[in-house]
Length: 379
Ligand code: CAA
Image 1 (cartoon, rainbow, N blue to C red):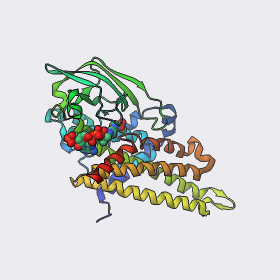
Image 2: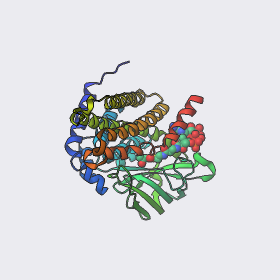
Image 3: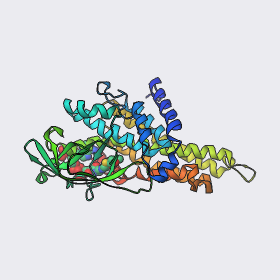
Image 4: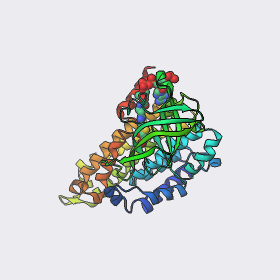
């Protein structure tokens, strides 16, 4: 067992840290208040190679390992979880899904610009009546010559308006249940494809979350990913890796709040000494640091298993379950350490507390992670 980072890991972490401080921190409060997508910042993240980190360089990716990706996600999420969810969806769901299961033409046409960050992608599984119960897809794709005719609605889609390419999961044979679900690459701008309303959210307010409507959208057969009926497995496998990205996001949110609380505790004085000299605060900091470290080990372990080509589905569910709970607990405590200042925007921790909550909901709620874990244990 080796707990050392490589030189490359440290270089990636430092580059992400510097970028987050220099480019994401200024304006993060305004973007949250105004629910403004970080367009310029995401463009720069693409130029720096953060949008397709693990993709093979022959498809314009960074060719890095999952540990590097996790380190970058953590640093970006400490400062701006809205930017990091776009990064996570593009890397873990869209690029990974296309690189692993797309054919050569699909990779040339779609993966290359997605991995370089020239365009960004979205992953469309959730529906108004199919969130956790992902087998109950109502969106339908009916074969008609060399096209499928796509009809349905998708909800809660990250990068919903800013994406150019959408991976859409749809029923192609409802009688077959989850084995009748297929995955498609859908381009923005096709007739009948409408981007619906933007959600007004509690947290990650800078990310653009939209519903999408498809009415008789003609999707070429060439844009189906894998065989008909492969879509559910495609979605599940993609989400296994996506959960590592969201676990890293949760870890970053927790670490960011902890670092702010630690620094504040050394400055703020009460009863004649800094609050860091009061045991009530020391114990909070000790609990925060310990739970973050435990979450970090789970997140890194799931990344390492993925890099080693081993099964990481259950490890990534554990990492996401635990890190998202830690993000919630630590951010609440960070607000408490800040007292009244923690409750105002200027000190950042209230935003991190609001951002933390989504990590227990998207890419499978905590209850879904427990289903995945308990099934693996009992198998
Ligand atoms: N990895 C690989 N395959 C899996 C899998 C996993 N984690 N979970 C299930 N499967 C496979 C099963 O092996 C089975 O395949 P076979 O029939 O070939 O054996 C098939 O999928 C069906 O499995 P189940 O019978 O277990 O399916 P289920 O309906 O009982 O439940 C579930 C599965 C785990 C609850 C699943 O529906 C699920 O994960 N739901 C949550 C969906 C989710 O995470 N949505 C997030 C949306 S994306 C998002 O949030 C992105 C964003 O914007 C940030």
